[in-house]
Each structure stands twice: as C-alpha cells, then as structure tokens.
Amino acid sequence: MKKKFITFEGPEGSGKTSVLRAVEKRLQERGIDVLTTREPGGIKISELIRNVILDVHNKEMDPRTEALLYAASRRQHIVEKICPALQEDKVVLCDRFVDSSLAYQGYGRELGFETVFELNAFAINDYLPDLTIFIDVPPEIGLKRVFHNHRNADRLDLENGTFHERVYKGYQEIIKKFPKRIKVVNGDRPLNEVVEDAMKLIDELE
Image 1 (cartoon, rainbow, N blue to C red):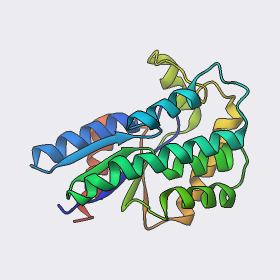
Image 2 (image 1 turned 30 degrees about the horizontal axis):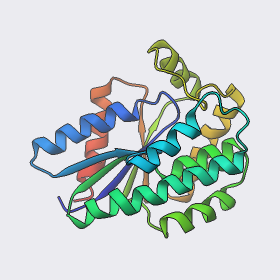
Image 3 (image 1 turned 90 degrees about the horizontal axis):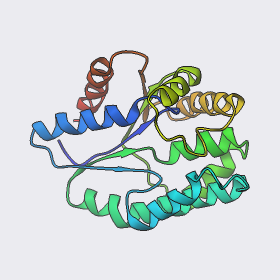
C-alpha cells in the first residue's frame, strides 16, 4: 500500500477512535508502516492548544477564537508530523481533521462553511486527505455512549443537544460537498462490523 493520508470523522461518541485503532492494527499486521495521530493535538504545541480548546472552564471562548485555535493547531500538526510521515512513505491515520472544524465551527457555531473553509485552507495550504471515513451515529446515541462510558466530558461534549444536532446536520452537508473523498460507515453496529467496512474502503485506495 502506497503512502496515504486517511482521516476518521464522526460526532461525539461515534466510536471513530476505536475504529482507527483497530484499522491501525490490521494494517500493521500486513506489514504496513502506519503512523496514527489526532486532532487537535498530535504534537507538543498542538496538544497545548487542545488543552485550551477543550478545557471545560473556558466557557467564555469566542467561536472565532475557537476556530482560529483549531486552525493553528492543525497547521503545526501538518508541518511537524503529518507531512514528514508521508514523505517517509507511511500511511497516516488521523482522528479528526479539517472536516471537524467545518462541522463544529462552521455549522455547530454557525460561523458558516465558507468562512471556516477559507480559514483552514490557509492553514493546510489546500492539503486534504486521500480518504475520510465518517462513522455515522446519531448525536443522541453518541452522547449516551460518552456519558455511559464515563469518559471525561470536554467543553464540546457539554454543549446542548441543539448544538450537536447542528454539527451532525453539518456533517451531512459536508459529505455532499466532498462525495469522492468522504465515505460513510454506519457506526451503530458492533465494532468488528464497522472496522470491516472501513477496511474495505481503505483497500479500494490501493
């Protein structure tokens, strides 16, 4: 398998991180050199920004400030970690990327798709994944998972249901805008079934 940049998206509690980890294991078992990372975060500077963004005490954060912080974190992540890994012919699996900003800030915060896309185009220099796998789970189911699993809820988890509905509907619009890149997998099923479908999509890239 040639170098590829594959991202995993989904609403809160979609299970995308578990799917990513299972995919990583499958690829490694094939002898493929894989690098896994996440957003916001992945490297020191971006992890520090992540802490600011997701801190439940930062309730006063302005939506544009939030969008700018995500873009700044993403830029450093690309330059310092993602691009070097691809240059070394690795397959990069990333837990969230630019589509999260489009969904959460563009639609959830109602800043607008174009505004957030233009901001991030500057940050990523129009660098987009080869494949984005969207783990589709309705927000009400995903949020139940978050709190049932006793995961430490972050600032976005604690937003109201209306916000999460806007994010979910935003993802549906983004999928329509990028149908060749973004592929949908039903996440409301056993993990092994979701992973199988994700692997099929990845294999189609070869």
